[in-house]
Image (cartoon, rainbow, N blue to C red; front, side):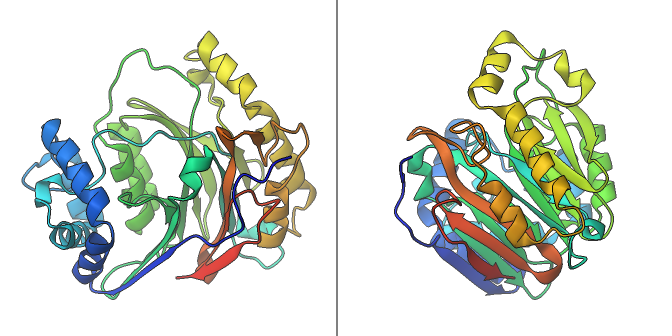
Length: 347
């Protein structure tokens, strides 16, 4: 076994004020990344999905369900010194990585509080870009998430009580489609305080990506969404516990699995990781805590294609995240959870 990164903390960005003021501070902190993204957007003739001048389905959903995001991103544009219509996620999306995500309903934890999280399986280079972002506006729900510079959508939760985690999905679309950009769809679900309505919108309009997201509400349910360029399948958990790796679970999506997808699935141990994490969490049903969940993310059965993956410098578990939304806590390791103590951040 190799230690791919030295012990250390993930840098912490912490902003308070109005949504617009938080955006200005974040824009100053992310100025370089946002300027690079804006230049790429200009070259691609791309306009930010939130910008009302663009109109369309996404801008209308944001305006109706989470208008504070507009104030936040306008502030980011001001802080970074980029045109508003070009401020947002780069049109060339960062690749999703393998990862294993989970959520547990509050009825099946020791303390009666929902927990959720994931591993991050990436190259070693990505480790040093991680940031924990805390945005605590006084006029909207806050956000606490593990992310990268320039990416408002990370891996964590919002003050709405909703958590969103995400990972790759090994399927190949027959055609490309969907009205909603991926980051927009996830941020609407995360920040709107109307999760059921957000999921209905995702199913109705579709998302322009191939990916999976684990979604959990502190009180109601935990589930996942498999997304494939306009197609959406809702995946329910098993008795209040939900786990997803990278292979398709929905029957409708299994017909989209190619030979190349099958090879990616095998080389990353996707089926093992999902089966094993279900086993570990279900064995502790009713006794689950954030500590027990983090220990499960350290598991090495089927090493190196384990939950805590050690495939090599190019792909290994470079972070682990466990969220307690009802307590406003996010526990994060920089590097493999088997080799690094978590740090706890509070919304």
